Length: 250
Image (cartoon, rainbow, N blue to C red; front, side, top):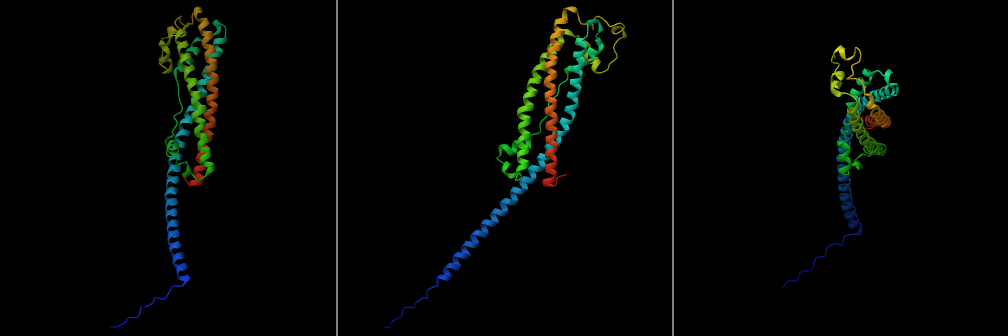
């Protein structure tokens, strides 16, 4: 019977185990770094996408504000003209000037806020993707300025607009408003001399006084609204310049 001697495997040194641990650690660590870098690249692409989208929205905002501001400046001027004429003695009022300006009081305009990108950033929890705190803070302030201050002013302005136009119907003959706004020629007989149809009856003088008071409040709200529009326009332009500089947009 043969007797087999047991073979003995040489014991590995502790340095071998240390080396294996280091290799495993490096493999895991490199994998972590690669995944982290991939996530960083993806988030940066989304950041650029949101920046470009916000840039487009802001350009639309500035375009809308740039037309809103002269509109409300003109409306403010018309309100002042109407109030000045009403304050004159009855026999010295320029009736056609009153009609020409009151006819335009039917016009109204609200700022169209292009907030699709800001809403995506807020609702999707993606504000973290905007790495530049100066930009993210400016966006939040810009959005809050519109949705709190300006929207509240617009609601109040819309309410007094309804009141002003209701009062207008009680005093002036709106039959000719459209023709006046469109610069349609009216019969000379209406102005030579001024026809009674254009004159404000004596019995309507109290209504005219009330109309002037409503118009005063409307004028005050419009002034606040106009200042808000100008401030928001400056903020929008500053944000556009910030985005252009930080993200090299054109």
